[in-house]
Image (cartoon, rainbow, N blue to C red):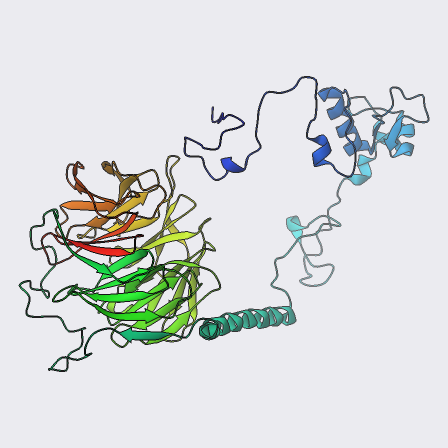
Length: 526
């Protein structure tokens, strides 16, 4: 029936309720002795009283009033007091109070003059002027035809001035937001920034037993069994970690202690550099293609662009709202463009060269959770708190695919498979759903990974480099591993004391996985 029955004292809902249903009035048993219970609330400046009148009588008087201009007074039981009519009393007296169903002499009706008169057809030899030939296209007298217009020149010029002022105000906010935030700084924690050959930590190490310049996914992967290292340095929880692009010899982490840190994955696995500049917790980080720069999104309403090697903050971006996710355009010729998802339901496109906003995508009805580029970077997928997924053409703010099912929950995190064909979407009903990353973006009903409890956290799924396994953390500090083909649980291991936010597989190793948690630790498993 589409109804939802709950106890008046219930504080939890056991079913997935849509956003519209949550705003409906509460229904219950009707009290037969109380009528129009909401009348006093809905009409504060008047009163409500009932009238017993049949539907047929009402329609008769309504049509009579429309045709003749009068109707019987509904507040009187008979027409003996005064006249008993409302409206055109002269017409009522002339017609004897006849209704629309009574026979009335044509000479007494007033609709003869109300009939519209056609304009003259004009003269055939006249082209312009009041006597111009109109022929069968002549209109009616006193007939108004609305013609759409764009306003006069002064109005459009004033509107353009307002738009320019608004755009300038936005650009001023973006450029000067750095003055409102904490002064950026960086600390190098190593012994020396350069080795004996003048190389920094950005150089890919060649003295390890793994080819870090090879193609990821060519090796056969296995599930990790033991803990081999723990990185300690964040004073609060770690919200996100990212391996350095391609080589993965460095690990970048974002913490709730307002700091971003970069760690060495090989050799002594030490802390290399800290980046300071945010005044609140950092929610998301992402590298560009070559790893020379990275973006950080924080709850202080700022997105900062950093130089990975020197630790310098290149530019700060802001719209005045909280950014929840950031993503560079993966195309090599569009590395100066990135997208940010904000709490005001918008996806905003920035240019890092000028610092200005170049596009806005504003179709969602809730805060933006994720932005994922698909289909050779021509399109991107966004998920939101409004329990929908939307696909967009890059640089065109029109939704090309709208995904919303009745049983669909919000999706707080998304990961692309190594072959770029699938999207692993962490759903808030404690399961990982698989959607196609090609043209149709359909859900794969045969693939469903469940068993873990995320309890509303944005636990990011992870893929093994060869695509055989999928992993995820949960709210209890466990890490789960599933088989991609069979969707069966292969292993569950206790990794942290609090919720595990990310599980990142090393792209060149066979079984190494990095996990981060709100307990402030980053652990490395093999």
